Image: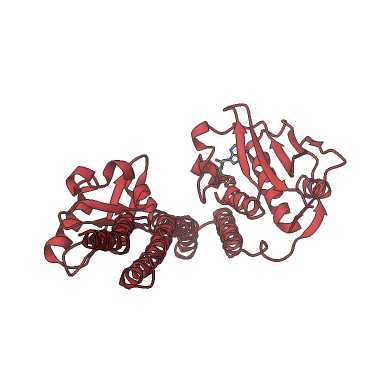
Length: 409
Ligand code: ADP
């Protein structure tokens, strides 16, 4: 009996230590792996089946850990790419609830990610045209592309491509903001229309005047008058063509890409003023400090800026009033001010006068031989060199045109 009893105790102890404890350990380990603790390592359970099972579980856990870390990294990369994409991306599930939206799509559609995730299409309150396009693509199970406009503070134009996936699980929406492109197209169209219009006026005059000269008997005095008009109009045309050529060269980047020469701006201002105001009839006040630093640019381009601004100041200021040219160094740039005592510029026009062909009083500008391109050339040159140009003015009390250019070194 004692022997049987001892044998039973021995067998029970063996069962508990060799089978039950390792099993408990394995269960514990499997539970930890299931809970996501993949770095969990079981202690050595010996060289028997239990030990080998433990080792296999250890290996499985570490492989699982590696795969999950790999997935995480891939997910992070994908998210990074999605967030930095210029194009907007949205993914809808099969019930058309939003599952994913990137930053660009938030911006294009003026949505906020936290508010729209998991919302159905009608709840998103997106543009109705876009909503219809998505529904059409899902219904037809075909790729659909289109365009739509959104109006918040300004009108934005967007292109969209909708791709419903074959298995009908997800729908991908790709958005592209084409507002800039549309604006550029518009500017180009307006520019071509303006050029044609500006050139048509003198061409029509020249034709009418020459037809009269050819068809009718006109006395010598009238003949002279007509010829003077033709001469005047042809000059106007050549001014316009000349300014257009300058703008075309500037748009091509000519003069901005090659290496610049350093030169003293003070000397250039003095030279240009002397070159422009030759007859001495206008009082010119020069306020140029002697220690003005050099600038790096093409001298002829900067001379063009000064000439255009001086020409305007002279054109619009009564003959007896003076024009002041002031320059100073401010931080890393030189600021040049051209102060006149003309009619000034109304606040609503202060930005627009720098547009191509924009004139406050078209008839007056034409009569004075203006092309409406002078200030746009000024802006193009100054900005090409990294500077800025603007006008400060009080209506009726003259205008101050200010431009800046970076100082060298
Ligand atoms: P324009 O050849 O007509 O002078 P600009 O581009 O040089 O063309 O100027 C655009 C418009 O800005 C002018 O038509 C004029 O109405 C206004 N302007 C420019 N300079 C002055 C100024 N100094 N005083 C008043 N108005 C000005």
